[in-house]
Image: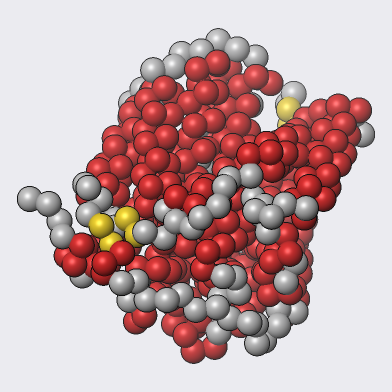
Length: 482
């Protein structure tokens, strides 16, 4: 039996649940290989430097796809782009599951990164289909999946590899992607929300080249050396390309990213805050697992296995989920600006707790939960600020750019944390391991970054020129099977 437009319009909560589950799956897949990262050279019969790209390639493709997927969604309709993202995730997961060498694995992981377009497009679609009484909470939940998926991906992947073959990681991901694809096609409504226009292909290519070059330089700087010519070529070259791309976009009638809209104070300041909050989220994900897994013989390491370390981190993901509806309530009462400031401040407090409480796993659990609660609060506020400040026709691309800025923050955090931990070491046997002071510096830097985010959020105009989204007419909803 086909589903009528009216029936689809009457079950938005189910559609929102599907979108959140899909976002959670797309984000979770990004961290699947972390537990086996050290084993990848042997598993894929390649060098350690080549194997490192299994993690990096998803970061690069995810960064590129977020603003591009948002723009495409604004042109052809959001549900269609979400369905294609789920299909890409399925194909990428199957390729990875069948891979035993580096080339097909990189291809599959690149496709998995492209599936991250699901999240920003899902956020903008929720704004259109959610009833007013649950709109804030729904946006908060969907936005939080970006952090929650990464937080629970580590223990989930560690458990699978602990009890079975590593290929099972990707078969499970493929099964989840297939389920999401079916649910999206049958439950999530296709709204005739596409606008007339064209995709700025030249702009998309320019953005991809600039972002990839810049992010490769940042993510590999610690490995190659920050003063190495190769690192400088990638970073400086990427910035130059992005600068030229910006000039090109300003001259287009239908740009990939409307930089004039992006330059408005509410949007600009929110995107800058996104970098700081993204930095704060990632910093704990880099430092805490390493501290948990260092041997107790160091005097400060906590001697946990990979699986145990993941389990100690897992409650942080649950805290993000718990505080997503809290964020929705704060937004309704105090506004998204105050909510973003609150979330960033809570993350900073979590890091300060970690500076003084790092002598037992339960202490790091407390610090992680506090910081994760702040992520849940802050991540939810940012898309609300963006969507309230741009025209509905630009919602997808605007949220995609904001997601990109969060991703940039996590990339900077990974590079900075790695630099701190590798430049402050002590010799243990034949290995150089980070000192206790290095971990404390990581936590302090994380706190400073998030408090900078508070200051940036404070600068967001209190009364932005909010745009409203017109209610969706049931006539504009069509059965997805049509």
